[in-house]
Image (cartoon, rainbow, N blue to C red; front, side):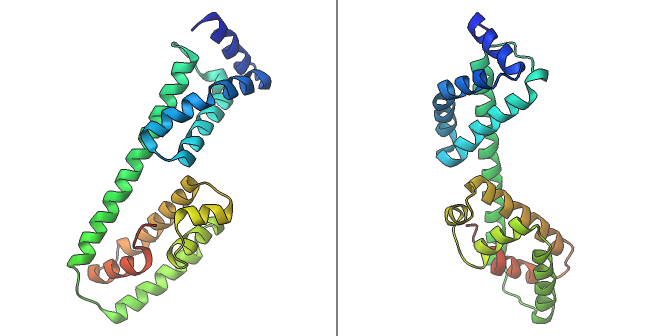
Length: 195
């Protein structure tokens, strides 16, 4: 670490807000563009850079940097961006797997289907308020993620997190259901496509 960076890092560790703000403003664009190279989504890239800086500020006293400060932050931003890409890839794979299962399913058991619908609606009602609101806007109002983010004043990443959480909790409702074709069709009805 250069003497200049050491001085900046000491200031951040000592919770000097002005030093932190100056460094953030001077280097934000560099880290933002680094994240955009991976994500191609400026909103998520911005959130990742901000999250990394917040974490840096909060944990500065316990962080031991052996390289340069700029390299440390760059590596953290790239790692977070790659993790986001990996999470999106896994989400797409899950949706594709569900899609294949749905295409192969032709059986429908109405009575069991209605009972499962009731369980799912109850589970939706038990979601945390913001999570339930995002999920309903996505699945029942047919809004896209960007539209939901704009209406609620939150980031697309937050919208995705709420939808992922809702799907995970609702999956637990159908996970132990014996009538496989029934719940696959219900998944199609309630949760497809991924918006």
